[in-house]
Image 1 (tube, rainbow over the protein chains, first blue to last red):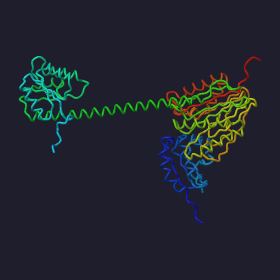
Image 2 (image 1 turned 180 degrees about the horizontal axis):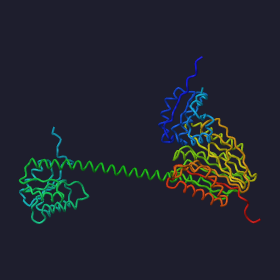
Image 3 (image 1 turned 90 degrees about the vertical axis):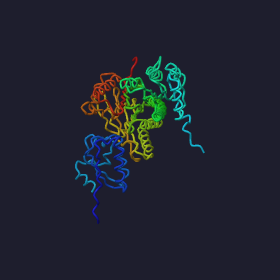
Image 4 (image 1 turned 180 degrees about the vertical axis):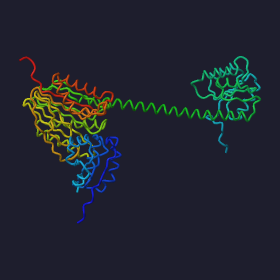
Length: 107
Length: 405
């Protein structure tokens, strides 16, 4: 048996993931999603704000993962966390308090 | 075969020679014709000015000392008269190099000087300079004309776009419910898109037995694309016009499937309610939308039930409505996140708590006055920072029966 590979880690560098930042972020994602990863550790630590367009990019990232793809999020600011809860996206993106917790969930 | 003539009409300079010495004028004319110019002569300043007024010339070669109107005066008057016309190159003949007099001549509008007796080579250089300047002037003039016409076309296009936007804006406004009474329900609203067109829309459609289908849709993004989508979803939901909780669930499921089918990143958050005053109840689905505020006679609360994902994300999303009491005297407030996420001058958000406080405080006021108070509070809160998201809010009241008892 082989040990499962570690999840793909994606860090969103933009402090505001909004309509302006969505296009460059999408371009960063494209090559990473070619192989349809099944697990992603999404680091939102630098992000203070996500608008509707930014959220749309994250949803489309989830759709482009392999079947049964799982995402764990670390570093979600309170406003970002609220947005995930409001849209029920927290049922698909597991919001974690630490990277260890995220890695354990994705293991 | 003859070489191309340098005297083509377009390149041939039209020159006026002004000199009271007729012989000198004739000699100059012959020389200038030799350089490919078309030449006329005038015997003094007065005749020179008269010809300049009658015909177009590219160049004037004038003597300085002349009886009556001298060279300087001729230049001044010619420049004053031709300020808005095409290019005119003025060459002045001088007997000696008097620096002060030459400076005055330049100020009057002389382009170049040539000493007497005139050397052919210097005259040829002066003609070439005039020819080049005229060419540059014509190019510049053509470029200016092209720019002016491009500018005009852009202005016209902009006017069309503005007119289209205004028409669309007016259509979008007409979709909104009329403030006032619908059956036994009263309603009042705020609708302030950031741009000419917004991605928010509000609908209120009457149902049988005094019921109302109430919804607030917030389409992803802003501007024209979001507005077009909001038009579509508004019409679609109105067309489906669910009357029961089951139909409400089906309608949202159908909208979700339709938006998902497009396969792009578009989506919308929707708060949709069935209000049934006869039963003093309401049913709510909150598809990714901020939770409505309900002010009942006994308490004000946030309706956190009926939550689902926005429409357009995942095709299998279930949309289950939740029931809530809506007794007479209750007010329900639906709003877009633009309201609660409005930021104040210190960068803090308006927030749900302030909105609840506003709704609660508004209970002492009429419904329109309470909505106006919330709008005023929002404006005060945002101050000069303004707002960068569409602002939409609708308040609806299960009004006590009015009229004679």
